[in-house]
Amino acid sequence: MKITLPRQVLIVGEIRYCRRIGIVYHAGVLIQDVFQTPVALSEHISNDELSFFLVGRGLSAADIIKLREHLIECQACRIRLGETDAALNPSRRPKS
Image (cartoon, rainbow, N blue to C red; front, side, top):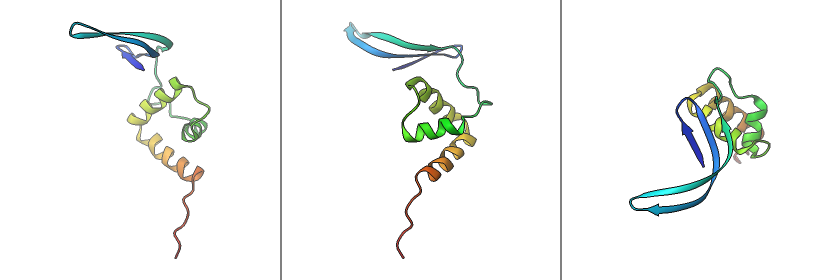
């Protein structure tokens, strides 16, 4: 689970329980990590991080969340992600 608070605070955790109390729900969260400042748009994602993201290894859950949020906002990194994906996973040429 990801909780985003004002002033660029990101909390990553696991829901431990969820109970209905009247018309609302109370959830217990085991906090795993807290981040004070997410990656700024001016700080682009490194080639290594893009590669790790594509193969699904080498990044923590918090790193993946920050990377995905950056990709939503940064077209340049989305383009590089596509280029890296093409390099790591070349498609087979269709038979003539």
